[in-house]
Structures are given as C-alpha cells and as structure tokens.
Length: 361
Image (cartoon, rainbow, N blue to C red; front, side):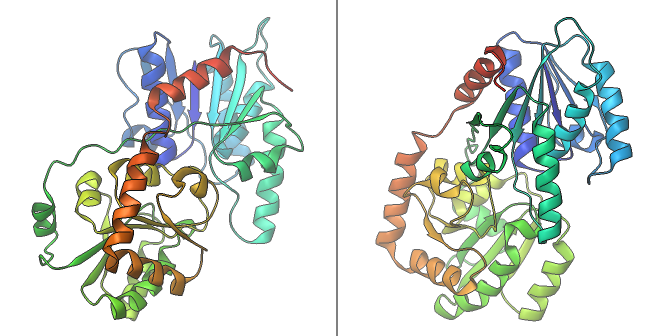
C-alpha cells in the first residue's frame, strides 16, 4: 500500500502516520511518500512501514507536479493501493495514474482534508483543480459534508472519512504547567492550538482578547503552534497591548490542555480538526466556530459561534470562564461525546473496506 501526502505540520501528517501504523499492525506493507520536511516531523518508520522522499510543491506548480508524478509512477509499480491525502498529493497521484501500465493497476483512493480558501479567484481555480483531480480516483473520501458536496458533481459517491484523535495523558499537573509558563495561580488560562495560518482565525482571537480582558481581567490567551502568520500576529498583539502569547510548536500539548480553563478554536474553516477531537477526549470546555465539520464533531460538547466575530468570541469565552455551571455542563458533554468518536481501529477498518471494495465511478 502506498500513502501519499504533501507538506504537513499538523492534522494530515498525524492522521497518515496513524493510518500507516494501523495498516502495518495488520500485516500490510506500507510505503509513505512525501516531502523530506514531512518525513522529519512525523514518525513513519518501523515494522512494515517505510518513508520515501517525494518533493511535492507547497503550491500548485505544474512542472514540479509532473516531475513528482513521474517519479511516483515508478515507485508504485508493485503496490495494490495508492491513497493520496490532500489536494496537492491528489494532483500528483492523479497524474501518476495516467502513466501506470499494468495488467492489474492499483486502486486509487483520495481523502480530501481541506477546503479551498483565499480570495474568490483562488477558490475557483483550486476548486476546479480539485474536481479535475478527483476524476482520476476510484474511491473518494472527505472529512466533512461540505467538502464531499464540493466534488459530488464529478464523483457522486463520496464517503465520509473517519479521523481519530486521542490526546496523550498529561505528564505534569496543572500547578506545575502554570509555573513553567510563569503564570500566577489565579490566572485564567485560555488556550488555542493550531498552525499560525489565516484559516485558524487567530487574528480574530487577538481582537477578542482585548474585549475578554474587560470582563475577565486575569485572563491570558496562549496560542500553541507556529506558521506563516507568526510575525503578523506578534505585531498585532504588540499593537493591541493584550495578554496574548505565542508559544510556538509544543511537545506538551496534553499538559497545556489539562492546565487550561477553556480551549478556543476560532477557525474560519475546519474539516474534522484533530485538536478539537483531542480536547473533547480530554473532557475540557471548548469554544469553537460553527464551520466545516466542527458542529458534527463536537455535538453539544462546545459553545459554538459564527466565525470572524470577535465580539461573539469574547462573549462566549467570558460565559464559559465565569459560569461554573456552563463549564461543568460542557465538560460532561465532552466526556459523553468522546465515547462516540472514531478510534484508530475504526479508521483502519474503514480504509481496508474501501481498498477492497469494487471501485465506484
């Protein structure tokens, strides 16, 4: 089996790594193809799994995509399944499929993980590319209903992809974590987790923090993650003079989640965010936006608001932080919801079924 992905700093890479481990544990030979940076960030090695460098451009560059497709073509000669994750990997894989000449070619599968964001022109171009790319796949999965709907005009049969996420147990208690962050014992801690990208809406969170601190003066907002918007966010924080700190990439997210009074996800779009599933699994109170697959994922285990609205975001956070009954209800709902979320085993079961079923056009 071959799994193909492009550059990833978060959920897609973690998902593919979990899938590779799960398939290998069931006796399948798994080869993962992706950029060197992705291979360095995630653990794709061990047992019956190997990682192979395949440089896929961070944007849609035809020459680079054709070069990667030609190389991939030679690497998948003897595999039974080729599974692409994300648009850029889908383009390269679809192009490689055109050149695979075998009596029995592999089954080609794609999982769509992200919406096409940006200005209207960019969205239309990327949506067109996505629709053309998925035509070359036998099985198409999508992490949210809106993603599935976006390609049903060319692929009527789109399955919902299962995504699992389990937060590791914390290694330190609440007091130790807060001390390491140099926070006073009475500080109210709001945590956000994610790549520093415009999709995540952290600029909205910075604006909301100013409003929140009027209602909850001891509130501090910490953002765990790194990305291209770091300098812009740092400048925005300095200009606003608010208590928001960028922590960069962290290896102790579980500790941070359990030490926080509330978790916030102000995204402009999400598919099936692993961070939200992890927060639900940890039984922590969550405030999130009503976008993409978030409402289905969280059910009643989060306080949902509309995106790009700092006033509503600040108000929702203030409610969770000052209303102990509401916070307790959200935590109880999270524990109930966690029991129904997909496990690693569920994910592998679905994929094995997809790989073995008759391709649907």
